[in-house]
Image (tube, rainbow, N blue to C red; front, side, top):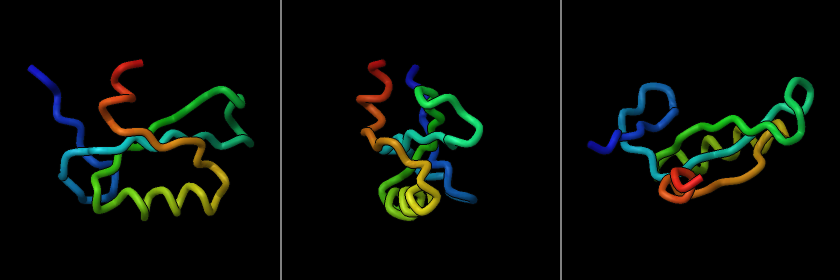
Length: 68
């Protein structure tokens, strides 16, 4: 059975469509990637939040992130 991944936005229960890969360079090694999940409605908001802090490294479709 496939697990349904849920958006990381506070209070959201929608299925995730995007994986936002990020790291905080002050505390993480450069190659380390943490992941937030985002539905279509929250992708831009969560991306903007991470980008404003210079944490966002990449955005991938959930399907392609699962292939790793």
